[in-house]
Image (tube, rainbow, N blue to C red; front, top):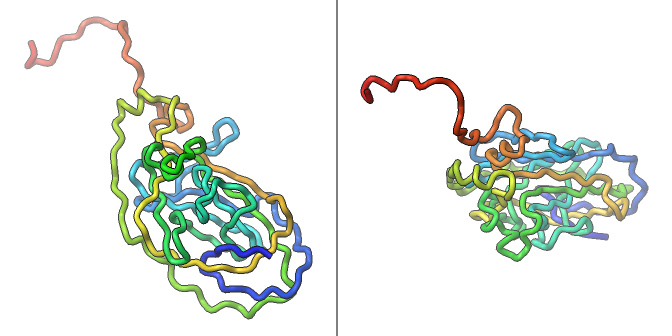
Length: 260
């Protein structure tokens, strides 16, 4: 039996197992939430991949929604790094357990059962993955989801959960230089996930027996600045500034009166 971290869940006493009913093809919905604006990021489909725009300096959360009536285990990877253990991410590692129909916002890198370091959109070179020598997968958040070998009996229903914990620190809102973003264009990743300020986030271990060795769902979202998504043609109705033209057409108009 494995033991995993779970958000605000009681420790269950597992007394035996039987196969669980099949889960839907995608039992967990994955999205990103800008914690400074409060908005859930709009996802854009581009060449078979989901993309969202992030704002440099803003804190964000990974929102997980269990769309099934069964408990599931979700292994969370941010920039190719396991958000609980800090290992280079792999599906067989520790994850978060979601109760049936539960929604949970994961707000940072887990530092202990009581604390996380906030997820913050930052320059790729300042990302946690880059700072620990693993820059290759900066710009992607992913999940591997496992169903549970359902227990025959479990402990009594848990007491009501405490109110959600609030963040302790606000992220800095840093503006990106538009001309620099255009120069980089679609060629270079503009955002990574930093290791931000500490905040309270309660969790503890619970029992979970995976129903299979392979995940029932693997999903990912790629993210970058809005300017880069515009340069790549991902954000609808938005384009980067057009290049100057030597012959834009037309005749010479009079200048404004004060320049005559």
